[in-house]
Length: 230
Length: 230
Image (cartoon, rainbow over all chains, first blue to last red; front, side):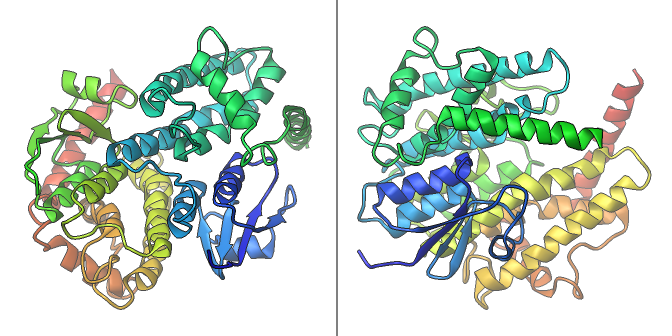
């Protein structure tokens, strides 16, 4: 494998950045991690992703690649001799891409809005919606994994990365709201999957601790409260 | 090429459905078009896409594939002996996927909201935003096309399909609001591209006439007005 110059602009808590890191780890590609500071954007980020000005951005031999799922597919295609990330069968690929799009377009926006929900009852309704999404993923798991341990079968694949990157956030929500979204009764397959995924060598060092995410959520909540009072 | 059973659940006016039709045409794949009726959803649609309940859905040998861009990639992968739709170079693929995601996640939602904008000035501001997006695509065109006639180079590719499917809608907005979003001064490359794209054999029979889209927009506006008064 040719030695490449890979930089990743990101932040430790971002699930989207985590996707790129896990994909690079799967392919055993070394990279320089350029951590953004909360509340400001580096000149390199602004220049590399002028359209969205968002992390993650991967810079490979001077070329910027933006959007987490686009980065994961790029990594799979460039380092094609490593373990494959996308399934090989076109229909399985379509299923993985479908669910990844569902997560990003429908499920995560609901999950993200829990933290900023204003009314007393709103978080409860939103958490329920997130739980319904998790149930759908439990159902998708049996179709994608075909009896194996991951959405990708024997090994971590595209949908494992897309969904698994949200596990830290999911656990922080469970902890902060005293609920269980992945459990033995409703989602037994996902419970087992989450344990395998979290302890996988490509994942364990980049998945943030729940406690740290809870702390960050509290800091951000204080920051929002201060901003809305000023 | 093996004979396949392909059905496409769609509607003539939908840009997303058009993407699947153009991709199938490029690959010379015959299909049965199952047209949905405005205002109701068929049982087949509800069963085939229970998550979003939206067109397009392609049913290939009994398997349902949902989400327009997922369908286009699926078509490219299954009928791989036909003209290729995704670029072959991983970075070019990443660029095409990036811009297609931008169109669907940022640009089209703004464009769609023009029709439902309430305040007098709102449509003007939204049209300006859409115009700014078109300017970015003009810039992207030079990087993707590399001096050739299409985003995909010599032939229609992924981003041509993703963006070109909105051309009918764009022209309807131009007509209804007396503006030009693609023109000789601001977007000369896209103006030329739009002409080539619209007259391409895989496109011309599925791209709806501007006049028909304008009529449909008027019908929908009346419907919305009646609903909000009732």
